Length: 157
Image: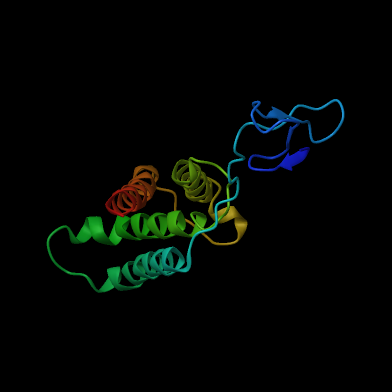
């Protein structure tokens, strides 16, 4: 008549007609009644392929912008590279496991910080960079475009 039931963690029943009483896992502890949340973000392979495709699209725009001629040519030559690189950096940073429910926000903030610091600190001393105050909003626009596209695609799934 004594039996051990284990439907939810640990419970001990003396009589099957009485309610089950939770038994602590270790002396002096309480039983866990909440489900543990998954704390690490691992993107499935299809998400990684999608993100890498967007990175490659940003790189392609960066490479091909010098061949553009048409309306807004000056804008494209001056700021399309900043927008494209910031867009690509967002999708690169999105691959990092922040372990938060706000993965997109952390990725957007980190990508924006990286590209803005790169701009302000003259390429971190690795690359030469000509500072233009309008590059900062262009970088923000690229990260915002990546964030918006990622959010829209996530809502559609």
